[in-house]
Length: 161
Image (cartoon, rainbow, N blue to C red):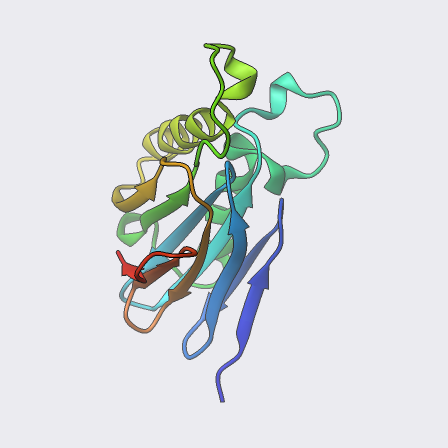
């Protein structure tokens, strides 16, 4: 019997076959999955902000793209994933409310996606697929057996990337 492993907001967790891993309610937050398709080891982090160095209260490393993705990488490597086989999929980063401003503080979703991609590039992890942006929330489920990331949104068809 497989388990459903839940990842909360500003949280991360690891997953192996036959279990699946999920996070709910991605608005401006971004869900990042790291995955080794050979040993079918994966992990997910639900980041809320792009950069831990810009915030005083930054003890929760899973809250930020820069620290959360790096910690997630260590986690999947610890479960037997090989560095050179790890790939990434990301979802979220919506602009949930329309603002008439170019203020960076109001573009959190876009900045989260940019920071996640920059961190993946820095760590030399290929981004295989993404479903980001727009103005709607997402719930994601990742299945290590198939490598499928399901994206569920209210009023939309289920998408698989």
